[in-house]
Length: 139
Image (cartoon, rainbow, N blue to C red; front, side, top):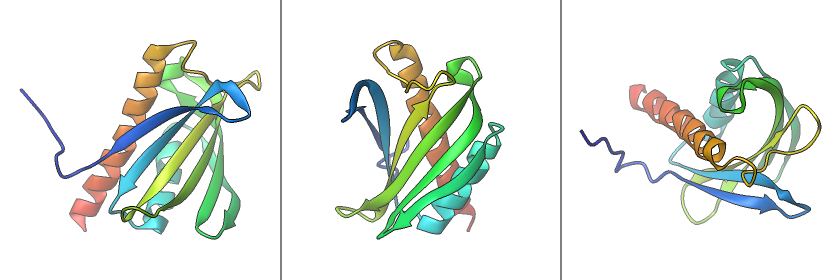
């Protein structure tokens, strides 16, 4: 059985952080969603993983959150800190969500050490996007 989401042009890019080539960031392109709802649903999504989210920065359309004590199943339920930046996507109507994962020892997650978990992190972000789409569909 094939399941597709043709109406959803969701994509995730994986990059090395500029100041730390061993660390990986994940950027999701969330299309057609209201900014304030994306922030609110992100906080609820993180709460479902036992984390608490705090606003760190907001200026000129860029909003940054820090989420502490998040238990991610794809990282053996380690308590991690997520650093998340939301910024406008000027080429389409959407929001870019960029995520960095700080591990308990202070290092940042690197997909170079575990490619399988990188795919699982992307799937986890896809789950968040699907949740947004389902909520929007109910409105």
